[in-house]
Image (cartoon, rainbow, N blue to C red):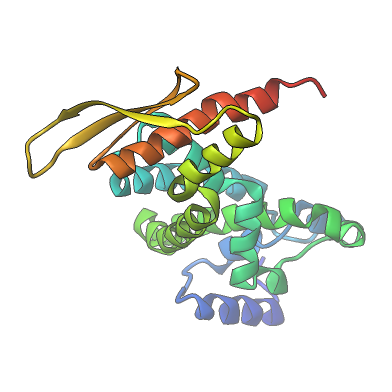
Length: 243
């Protein structure tokens, strides 16, 4: 079924803002149609559930690839934690809001009545669905070029706010507040040639090793060790504490 003229115009205006020119506009229409809208409008061509499934897989892959290539000194655990932070629903909803996606998203009246409660989930799903639509219409490279700058900006923001950059300060404040003293960092070994060294560091609290890290210099390795300690000892203890 061809798109109604007003819907086609709205989609074209939205796509033009982001440098897209879809060959199949029905893909973008479906990506921006919530299942609740289709339930209330049986004549709608489709909804975004299947495209969201595809976009979710694409986003996981592109985020993992970008992190792997950009941060060669992060271990698997740190890469996994960063990817989880970058693709979680709250972050995707922010991406969607920055795109102005709400203006062209079709949502059923029932969902609109509880919009504030459901907003994050709906926007996150729609963002992933748009990625799926873009992939089917223009290929993987188009999705990568669109997503990577957003991932980079989000990662830089999270790093400034409390990621690896501030890991040592965060860990020290936590241990001192609990009477555990100041964490101490111990160089375990140095490997590699002079032009590309790798430093292996352990962080100890009251003589006990809490985490380990590796980096191209001692400062980066210490930050990685502090982040490892935070995830292993602080976050794990928080999750296991009784409610």
